[in-house]
Length: 208
Ligand code: HEM
Image 1 (cartoon, protein in one colour):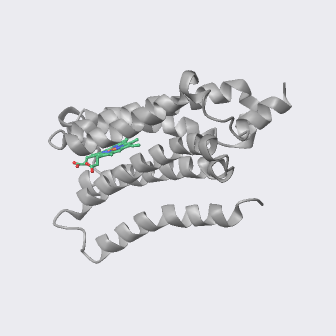
Image 2 (image 1 turned 135 degrees about the vertical axis):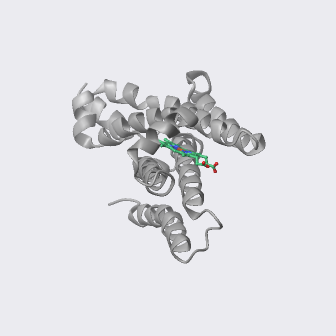
Image 3 (image 1 turned 45 degrees about the vertical axis):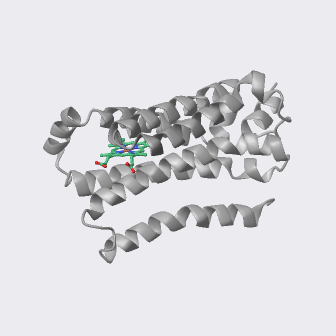
């Protein structure tokens, strides 16, 4: 398989941060509120992975190297996994697995509803990230996966609500996200080189 080593390297690079954080929590090295620190780090990690995933197509167009596209799906699935860890850490450490507490939290922290919306959309993208769905959905697969930009907007809104006091950090993510979105607008995207056909393009071409 092409880019095998590269794929393995990306897999390990994505696996290391959450493993390290869990280890740090285990040895009480995550500060005075390890549960909250874990939730925050996993949320931030998910946002980084979302931005990195969205950077793969522009990078391929700019450099012509197919390796970026070869790891795009894996990175998207890692983003989903981080979100699942983020939500699990929230449920265990901040809610104490108490559903009554969740109801109270939803009125106190409405940003959780925005995060949940982003999560359900990510779930749809994750379950349709396979060859069967690509073949079945045809052209609609690409349209469906454009939801990723809405997910990015919701994730940024969710974060903004949490870090209201530290706008500088949030602005950095918002600028990066806006730049990545702009790079996909046809007027700009056309000026970059043509991409290596991704799984959706290959499949839809085959079925045209
Ligand atoms: C059901 C879905 C979700 C729930 C319940 C949830 C829950 C939370 C909670 C409770 C916090 C704040 C913790 C604190 O008090 O500091 C938080 C922060 C955050 N979440 Fe989520 N979240 C969800 C979905 C998402 C998604 C989909 C993303 C990104 C793709 C995300 C990214 C973040 C980020 C970046 C932060 C801020 C971290 C920081 O301040 O360093 N969350 N989330």
